[in-house]
Amino acid sequence: MSATTTIRHRRSISEKLEQLTPVAISSTIKRLYRYSELPEWQQDNDKIITGYIRETKSVKECVKSLFLFHNESINIYSHLVPTITYLVLLVGLADMFLVPQFPNSTMMQSVMIHFFLLGSVLCLGCSSFFHCLKQHSESHCHIWSKVDYMGIIIMITCSIISLLYYGFHDHIFHFKCFTVFTVILGTICTVFALHDKFNSKTFRPFRAMFYVTFGLSGIVPIVTGFWKFGAYEAIRRVQLKYVLLEAMFYIAGAVIYGFRFPEVLAPGKFDFVGHSHQIFHIMVVLGSICHFRAILGSYVFMHTGMHHSSFVFIR
Ligand SMILES: [Zn+2]
Image 1: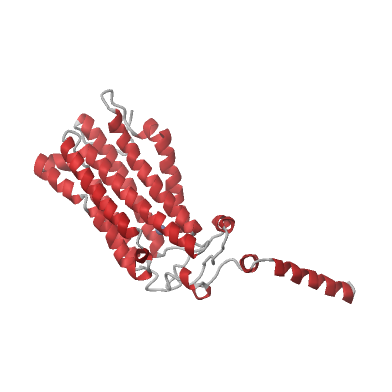
Image 2 (image 1 turned 135 degrees about the vertical axis):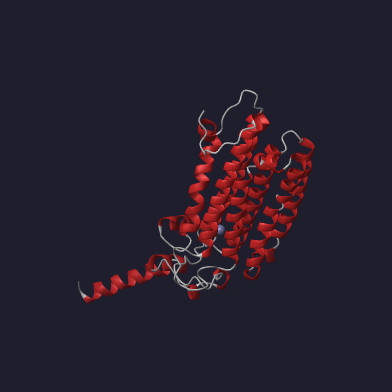
């Protein structure tokens, strides 16, 4: 190659680079960034040091990041896979394999199982979208974080109402009163979650406790059930052991999220696998499985007065 050709070649490369936006250049040259290289709005957890996707300004780039292993990958897939699973159950698989059919079962009785599944699909789906699209830009991150918070509120509301229905199926007045109470609490939570301050770094522990408190409001109807039906029946009506297991997962997840454990002990060691947000996600999924099991058991108890110990019902 002659000297003139080399100069012309270099000039054409630099012209092509000039045509690229800064974001396109960065994504061409380098795909993962350190915490210190992020714009301020993206800096949320300083205990996670590497593996970041920097502001993309492009939905396409965000979607492409699904095929790259970065520090949000497990956050995305830990909720995307259960979203698809619950969706498949919602559109028919639950009725085919998990929900026993009773001849005297009413439409409302089976709808409540789907109501819970719908809440779970919305919550986990919104969370997956948030974690995938949050790196677009500050404004997108802001909007999607609120969608994420709303998803959690919807899931808690659907979870409580669905179990309330089976627990108080023969006391509809109580069911209605507690449903109104839950919807009012959910509305108050929504007002807080949509406030700009709610998403700030300093609100992290508050956010965690906020959802736990809303979830724990389900104690009120359970205590009422104990008073009304006696301990033996109340425990079976709501399948209390699964509800307690669910509460344990949610509380543990919220505490881990709030205290940024374990990355706070060893910053940089859990960037890709094992950081607090990932553990929180997995705890949410485990909690939702426990709730699903509680609802199925409660539904069967409502029809038969029998306590089922197996997860998959033989039809
Ligand atoms: Zn999340």
